[in-house]
Length: 464
Ligand code: FAD
Ligand code: NAD
Image 1 (tube, rainbow, N blue to C red):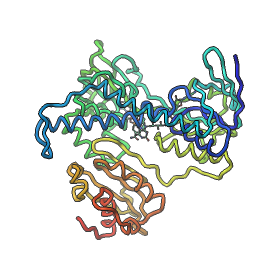
Image 2 (cartoon, rainbow, N blue to C red; image 1 turned 180 degrees about the vertical axis):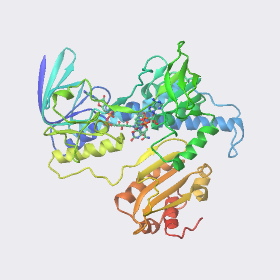
Image 3 (cartoon, rainbow, N blue to C red; image 1 turned 180 degrees about the horizontal axis):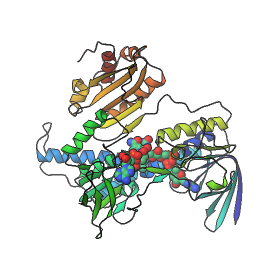
């Protein structure tokens, strides 16, 4: 049986791009239909941001208890080492995902969005078919918002399957791997590598570039590199993964010097990037221009086909949830008749490693027209009082020499992810060093290090 639906707006994909677009469309009174084949919340909620951060937290708890069992720490000792039941940790993590997932379903319902569970496939730019059981729903729309997200990339010699897994499987392992090899030392590789190192796996990282987290500069990454070294994580830089050995129990790599090496592994986690999800849903029928592998969009997220919009990971870097949501909200408002453009001064990026890294705006630069001022967490009372001051962390501000306009802010240190909002806000408001220096920051907080970095840029830091 075929049912037909005519809708004002059709959103395909219910991740942080698509569901936010749909809710905002609903709030604006647009008749909206959302098609999602998996879980509402998308990659971010089901197998990305949220589950990875839950495991990062659990691993931190386990590590702190293990440490107190080894030797008294902060005056606390444990008589026995903690026991890990990874399957139970995964159940706890899934509970958080379930809660958020039902929250999104409720928000969509409140916004009167029609949600259809199934795989959408376009026969032309404005007609989408969804198979439901033995039947089919045919949806025609005035506006289409494409938000199909991204999928993990495979390496040709190392296809997913058996011990070779992607981040999705890594977030739901039934048992702790004794030996884990991570291929790709980017966001996911280092975040999840850190989780398993804290939980007790022997972790080895293989990265093709000359440093881990290559999108950040060396100074920012150094505290993370040192933490991995202290934790006994082996890192092979400028190395290539060749494939699994014949017995399937080791990863064969070529090292920087061109030597072959066999890395014993129970699990090989491949995290070499993600690619836009452009296949299997009729994109080729929509006459939409491409920008390499991504769907091409302008500053309004309009594609080359009239009233077809695209957002999130599907349209390019940075592949971050908050960028997808910001684009989704904007497109909904444009469809409702508002004038909007996607032109943020900066999109914050956070790496939830040990310690954490935040970057907003211009990164380290040798530009003659800029000044760089840093303040170490070692001189920040709040950091020291929660063991966040001794790992080499700092806040760094890059400002224009001529007028002190802040162009970039970075930080590395425990808990600095929570400073991302203040940093982005400063850039969006066009803050000068004087604005940050003139803002009273509460004591004792990590934010005082940002204040002091601004004071230092003006030549009169107090605590250094
Ligand atoms: P997605 O979230 O990928 O959602 C797309 C949805 O579309 C999916 O649910 C899919 O099922 C659905 N879909 C696709 N095709 C169809 C179709 N034809 N019919 C119906 N439905 C379809 N970002 C951050 O900002 N912070 C983080 O801490 C962070 N951590 C991450 C950790 C991991 C392990 C991973 C993998 C990613 C992480 N990301 C993080 C990235 C973040 O998840 C993505 O940037 C974000 O999910 C992109 O949102 P999206 O809406 O574009 O797409
Ligand atoms: P990534 O781009 O962050 O890192 C991939 C790494 O793999 C790079 O360091 C790259 O040099 C390396 N690499 C590529 N090919 C290789 C090869 N053949 N052998 C060895 N190393 C190789 O990608 P990712 O970690 O898979 O994450 C995908 C995206 O998900 C990120 O770009 C990011 O946008 C998003 N993400 C964000 C967060 C966050 O915001 N905290 C967390 C996880 C993921």
